[in-house]
Length: 291
Image (tube, rainbow, N blue to C red):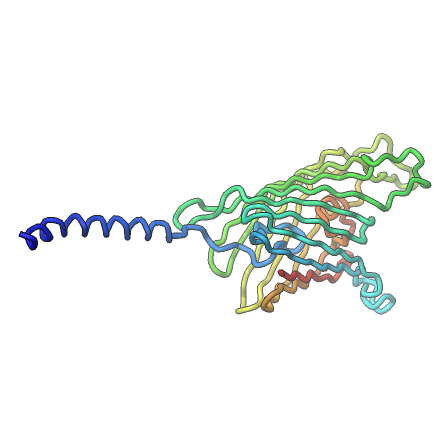
């Protein structure tokens, strides 16, 4: 009788066990694609990578002067522009950052947040939002008596959309909005400011970039931003940066050439002056360390 009872019970136990194993297996399945980029930036352009929850990153970035002057300033190395930035992973989906740059003595605050992850045989891209606020501390009250705090501010909003095509190739586009409360004067041929300023405070750009891993620890990077409503009289150019990443354990070392000496978003999107065709290219690097 006991054996008969066990025989009748066995199928139900078996089904229950199979159901439990299926449930456990479904929890373990991770359909998300690993981050498309190794570093938090491609070069200037923010990547879709976020800091891990509780992780702290230190970023030390340099942009030297243009190499065109040759040995006069040792190919720009005598004139370094530095940015120091701290980033903190508030959660797996939110990264906060604060930085200080020598370019216009700028303090910049930023937040990056995950909206949607690329999935294996599912959603095709990763979508991340990014917002930053830049404060220009270079403007002095003695030079501009009517200066207000609002005059120092610039805002950037970006939608970062990336796709990891293979373990080697990742690409990204970044529709961008820039608002500058204070515009730089645009001068005519006699160095007289054009009034009213032909540049709109609200500006739009389309950023794009990519990464190609060509060796175990090495990757080639490029990013570019096309300004979409720049005034025709403006001296500013579209930023183009080309470089490589070297992965060395706990940090990533990025080396590159760029026509932008600014490293914060409002600076490189709106105030890049270098012209690649005239040799106005600066060597630079980003050192990214996680704690």
